[in-house]
Image (cartoon, rainbow, N blue to C red; front, side):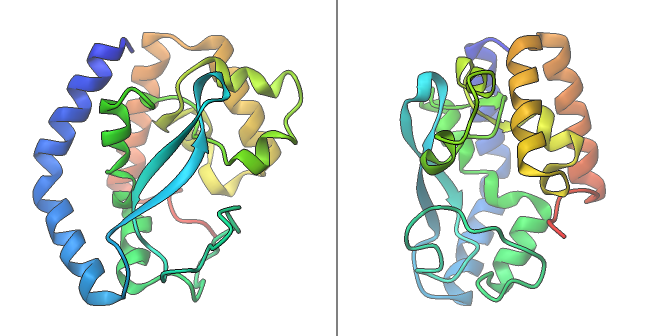
Length: 187
């Protein structure tokens, strides 16, 4: 999608979802100590680092080195509010601010952790030719249910085949997944 369309969708999304964001913020504060927003350094287009924003779903200090230890169902680091936010993908709503800043797009490969990029092949580095997205080809193909290596390959495939039509297809499938809840929570 063109950047202007991404920014318009992000602004509308923040406006429409603001009551949910407020309710989630209150629940997060009542549920555990720490900030409402989780900030993490990620790698985006051109391998530039940026600060990705999410609603905090884990106990404060659970991921102190920022290397992204896998989160499985029943993980004791995840708060009660966090389990719901992860299951519904509402924890990703602050990514819309990253879209407004021009650091992310609505559709694209999920942003990488810097520690992971050194393990990518030259072919897999193609994922950095496009802005990272809130949702993407790998997410609608199985999200956490598919191996990490396959997700990286799907992201590289998206970078080579991206189009407005593919983005619309990904958005439609994302909306179905969020509405049904299938394939969103890690096993």
